[in-house]
Structure formats: C-alpha cells, structure tokens
Image 1 (cartoon, one colour):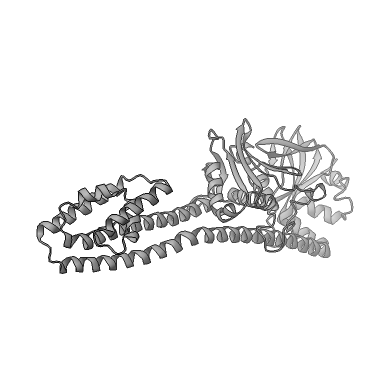
Image 2 (cartoon, helix red, strand yellow):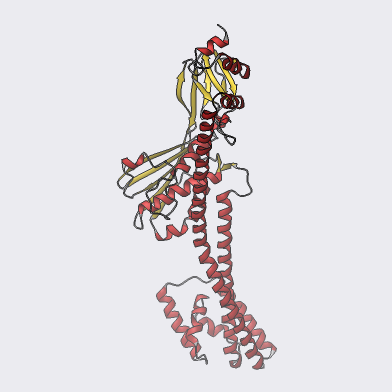
Length: 471
C-alpha cells in the first residue's frame, strides 16, 4: 500500500482531492519511530502536526513530580500538535509528552506547511482557525496581565501600609531630634554663662559618660516600679532647683538611675552647674534614644525593601534553588497590614525541608493569592494556618482557614479565569487560575482543595526539580 493510499484511509484526509493529497505528501514525510521514543516533548513549541499511521503511543504529563499517563492509543489517524499553524502570533506548545509504546509509523507535517495548505484549500476555515487562535491567545494574555496587575496591586498596597509606619515614625523622630539638638545648644549657652571652671566642666563630662554607661546597661522596670522611681527622682530634682523635674525624671528612670545614684554622681558638681548640666545630660540621653529609634526605623524600611527584592527575585535568573519558607515569610511581610488587623496566623514549618528548583517569583504569587484568600475567608476573628512538609515526591505547603468553606457548587469553578466570590475591588479576587497554572503547568506540581464548613485547605505539592528535568 502506498503512502497516498494509506493517508486516504485516514479520517483527516479522506475528503481531499488527489492533487491535494499529493501536495500534502510532498509537504510532509513518513517517519518510523522506535519503541520508547519521546518524539513530542511537553511544553516545547508545537512545530509539527503528527498523525499516527501504525503502532501505539502514550500521552503523559508530570504532576507533583510523578508521571501521570493521560491515555494510550493505537487508533490510526489520531493526531497531535500543529497549533503554530494558526494565526501569525500563535505560540502554542505541546500539552503533553507523547512516547511510543511499540515500533510506530507517523506522518509528520511542519506547522508552517499545514498553515499554507489550509490557506490554499480552505481560506474560510483558515480565517476561522486564525481568529479562534488569536482570540484565545488574547484572552489568555489579558487574563495573565490582569492577574499580574492584581497581584502587583496587592503587593504594592501591602508594602505601602508596611512602609508608612516606619517612614512616618522616622519623620517624627527626626523632628524630635532636631528640636532636642536645639535645646542642647541652649543648655550649652547656659553652662557658658555660668562661668564654670575647667574642673567643673570635666566633672560634668565625667557625669555624662557615667549616665550613658548606666543607660546602656539599664534593665526596664515594671510599670508600677517605674512610676515610683519617677516620683522619687522628680522630688530629688525639685529640691535642687528644677521647676520641671517631672518632665526630666522619666528619662533618668529609663537610664536606670535613682536618687541615690544621682546623689553620689553629682557630688563634685557645683550648685551653679547642676541644673543646666543635668538638663544637658538629659538631652544627650534623649538624643541618643532618638538616634536609636531612627536607626531601628530606617533598618525596618531597609528590611522591607530587602523583602520585596527577595519576593520578586530581582536581578536573578528565573529558575533558582529556593527556600520555600523564605518565600512564604516574604509574602507574609507583603500582607503584614492584613495580618495586624485580621485573622490569627499560625505556622508549622518543617525546617528540614530541602531547597527546590523553581520559578521563585511566580511561586510567591501563589502564596500571596492563597494566603490572601484564606485571610479574607477567616475574617477578623478567624484563624489561618500554614504547614509545610516533604516526602519522596517533593515538598508540600498547606494553607488552611476556619472560614465558612467553599460550597461544592462553586468548587468546580474556582480555577476559572476571572471567577471570584469577593466583592469588586477586594483583595486579589481568587487568583486560583494563575495559582493552578504556576503550580501545575510551570512546575509540574499539584494544587488540591479540601473544603467544608470551618475547614478549607489548599495543598500545593511541588517536585524537587522542574517537570522538564524529570522527563
């Protein structure tokens, strides 16, 4: 039997005219494949249309790091691939790996040739296929862009909330520090007008050093003891000419001082230098404390910027050896404003978790959507739990909440693009379509749901290496 006669019996080509069949054969080729030959690799561009003539092949995908067989077939005429023939911008890839189970013969037709023949023979059909392909691709692109923008908006909102507090505190602290430095200059002028001798100035400098050292080693008092100590020092200051001793006393108490310490430390300070000198020392303590606060606030801002850099994996290759826990922690920083005013969060992390090969920034989008949804479902008085673990197949992350649950009638729709049960403008929608695509399609993992009233769990399973490496 000739190739033309064999193709004529295939349902795909049975209606072709003789000249069309001849042109088809000239554009393609017959190929013989050996047993266990993976001639279609999952994810690669669908550059060819493959038609089964004889033999048997198997379709499979990797899910959760394990091979899952979708189907096997020996039906003549079954075809796969060719998607890049449709539309000028078509970039379709093979949706599964196809491997031969026995010696197999196929007819291979390059996608560009398929597109040319369709245009020549069926112009209207080619227009329809092109339009369908381009529309589907446009919708997919729009959905991905929208989901990315929503995730970006959530991250930006969270970051703005987290940055606002230390930034505003830093502004207030710098204003207070500027005012304190001005007061210190006034204290120095008063000391100068007092006409202090060199040994008196030296006594004040020595006292200032002793106070700073005491403050560095001070232990905080409980509130009741602190109030009693403030009253004690305020009385001591009042008896020595301070009309506002109650304002200065808290600073000395915070430095760990008491009246006995002050009695001993000021023994060599003259009466004329005592009031302006202690004011100057008090303001030194205040300035030091403000500098420490400013340092803490700027470090917090720096830490948030660092967390964003880690969250987005800036300046790094897309595929990284990543620590799952670090990605989750960085995501929680982005959601810090919701955690402060919402549900209680608990974490049970398996610290023996191995690093995995993954697209780090994309996985962080998954954690962002799942945790954000869990917080919304749990409400202000609810609970959200994050657990991690690993087994022979890879690692898993479980994100659970005690909210009302997802009704069975909705569960089948939660992975649809644009589907959400949230009010407009609230959170990230559900974002489960992009989460499923990142976990399953990009990483060869699995995203599973178990839900009932008071207990909803999303479990993400990821292989140690990307699915392409496993095949």
